[in-house]
Amino acid sequence: MHQRGVKAIIKSICTMARTGSMQQRRGGFQTPARMLMAVCVSGVLLLSSGPSAANKLAEGLQNQDSEPVAATQEGPTFEGEVAKCVLKTTTAEDGSSQAKNTTGLTLSKENLVVSLQCSGENNAIVPKDQKNVCSAAPNAKVADCKGAGTNKQITLKSLLGASGDIQWEKKIVSTDNKGEVMTLKIKESELPLFDKAFFVGCEENKASARTSQATECKVNVSVKARASFVGENNVVTCAYGKDSNPRPLEVEISADNDALTIDCGTDGSLKPTNYTEEFCVTDNSQLESCTTKKFSEILRTFLPS
Image (cartoon, rainbow, N blue to C red; front, side, top):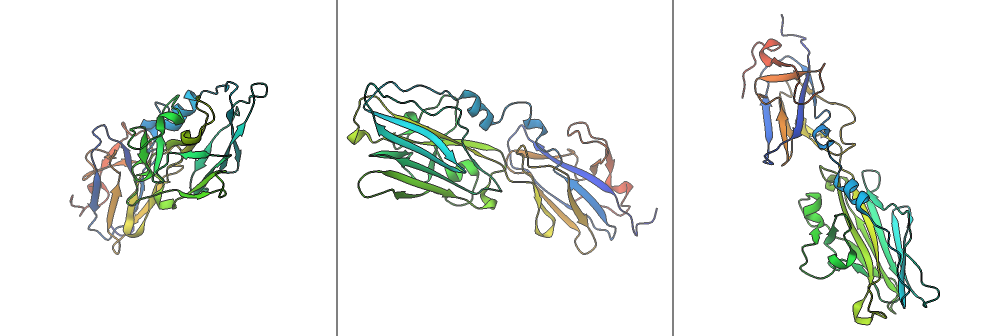
C-alpha cells in the first residue's frame, strides 16, 4: 500500500479516569501521509450512570411555606437569567410563602451572564464574598452558607477550574437599604469541563432583622460545561458535560502539521490505553470495548513517541 494519499478515520477518545490524575498525551506522526482523527466522541458516557450535580440539586430541592412573620421573602421569580427575591413586611393575617415551581438560572455558551436582585429593606445577598458561591447539595439552605470561613462556600475560580479569579459585580439598589443586585459575567473559556451547579440567595440582614425567624430566598444556578474543541496547532481539549460532545471532532494530520496534543483534563484519560501504538476504529463508539488497530497498519514509517 502506497503512503501517498492514504487517509484513515481514527477514533481517540477521552474518558473519565478513576485515578483522577492529569493525563495529557502527545503523539507525533513522522510521515507525509494524511489522516483524519476523531477525538473525544461520547466522552460523557461514563458520567451518565449517575445524575449530575445539577440534577442531584434539582431533585433535592424543597419548597417550604413560610410561617406568618413580620418579614417574609417572596420569590425567587425569574425574568430571563435574572432572579428576583423581595423581602416584604407582612402581618400574621397576610403572611406569604416562597414561590413554587421555579427553575433557576443557567450559565452556558449561549448565556454567559446571570443576575440576582435582592429587593426590600435590608435584604442582603448570600454569600457576602463576591468571589464565592454556595456549594450545591440537596436541601442546602442559604443560612448554612452565610458567614465568612464556612465550608459551605466555594470560590468561583475553584468551581469552574479557571486560571484566574472570577467574581460577581455588586451594587446597592438605592442608598436607603432597599436591597442589592449582583451580576456574574464569565467568558466562554471560563466554562468548566464538567457540568456544575451552585446556589446563591437573599436573606434579611440579621443586624436589623424584624423577626427571630430566618427569611431566605434561594436561587439555584446550573453551569453547562464547554464543548470539546480543536484549537490551534491541533491541540484538542476534551470536555465531559451532557452536551459537550454532540459529534466526533476532526483533526487532520499532514506533513505541514504532523503533531497532535489531546488534553483530557485532570479527571480524564486517553483511550485506547496503548495510545502510542494503537487507535480505535470508527465503527465502534464504545469507550471500553472499541476495536483497535496499529498505526503501523496505515503508516508504514510510523514510530511511537
